Image 1 (cartoon, rainbow, N blue to C red):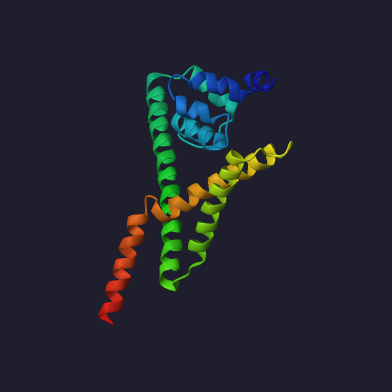
Image 2 (cartoon, rainbow, N blue to C red):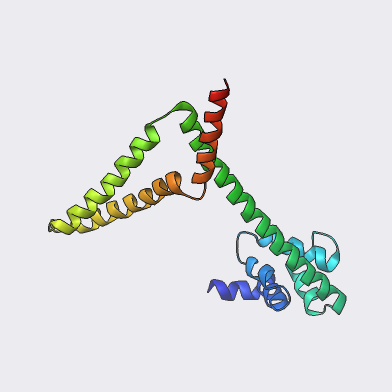
Length: 183
């Protein structure tokens, strides 16, 4: 029903019109980046923002070779912008983890280590209880939910202590140790 409604709208026509030339932009027309996708198409076809989806659908349907090349170029720029945004998000996440580790090392804070140990112990104790004993009727769901939550937290703990930036943490500790020796 929603697809039929969208097909009749300008967005459905626009998506069909550019699907072969700019498939990534076409895919984003149905998602949270629809506004950016429409703007990219408008700049490629008309050289400016502000065209309606109906106008764009008509223009793409009657586009000449030069406009199709511009649309293909907009597709490549759109893909590059999405990749850059994903890289920036990873950079921020990595920096956040490194900052937390750095804080822990500088303050000699045992809280993350203690919580990590408790989470991992809780995971294995819950797993052992589920395997060793017959759970009361109706409690399987609750234990499964608890095990799933603990498994997720265990993965986060392992990633924090041994993940991709564990080497960065070790380097930070070595550097801070070298600075302490100099002082």
